Length: 474
Image (cartoon, rainbow, N blue to C red):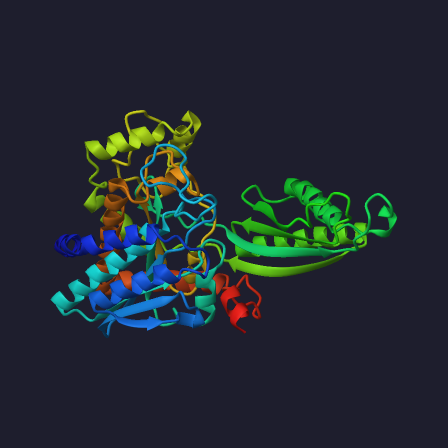
């Protein structure tokens, strides 16, 4: 308990600059592998805090690592700072007010994610210096989590090979341990190439790439009946062929994301989607080319670390929201549907109530409602490489959907700031437990090794795939 109290004090002492960092990153939202201003802000914060800084980690210009301490186990805090397209929003506004048309926005809270992880790292650095305990703390600023699989490329480059434990978190409406239920996924671009023709004068001479893409969509929709209930398939046109209906479209690019709870199930489902695309090309006499864009593994559990993180949550209690925060959240909830709010409570196993606008409880773990399914994350690939644990931090009104303008609107609020400081305390205290208790680290290692012995890691990305930023520079 004494260690927990002291590390919480270290977090409190350091929180001001890191809250300011989260606001600064919110103001410069950048997309996959283009987070140059954001990584510069994190670089400056690491330098200011006295870390030894390594830039261009794994050859990625927007990846960074700061290290402090000597000897002992290596604790890594994972941070992110990428945004989403088309989700800009005026901070604090209770109506949809985009800042710049289709501009980017931090609708998944990654401005908070990186800042809280760095806050935990700075606090642990101070604690190590104060106690003289051997150990090294690292902060990894990781690009392109939103579909770019930045950490997957970092894993492949061996960046985490000497790390003993990795710790991270994600913004959410409730404070709890992040359940290892993220889906493995793969993004693939299917390019159909046909032959253009006059759609009225000589349609028989054309071979429509657009027809091929639409037939593929129909085929995949029939496939949905024959896949696991937890699997997901989504698509978006990257190039629909053009705007002229009197031309037989000769080239179309459509991107598919395939997800499943287990890596091997995802790879098998992705293979079936490719076969559907091949069939569509055969039916339309077009050529189909498939290129993997990115891939992410599912999360590997680590019960010893999860139990330690839960114990820290219970010692700390819920975030210290006040009446002004609750009034802000209630006003934000007016922009949700009643179904949004009910679904949020049910997702975590709580009875819906109008009295709770913000998280004021520590949820039990595991959740009585079962795993909280939050999509996919490239932290999954790290979890196959090193024992990993994550938290969910309460940074928004209950009912807030991730990837929504409401999430962006709350990204600079008092609620967001208090939630990120709260989760930084949880992460830092969990790291202190690992450094102070050799048996906890040993149990985490044994559990991780046993899982890998049963099912070794296979990267979902082909070995010749490189990030877009490297393709552009080559």
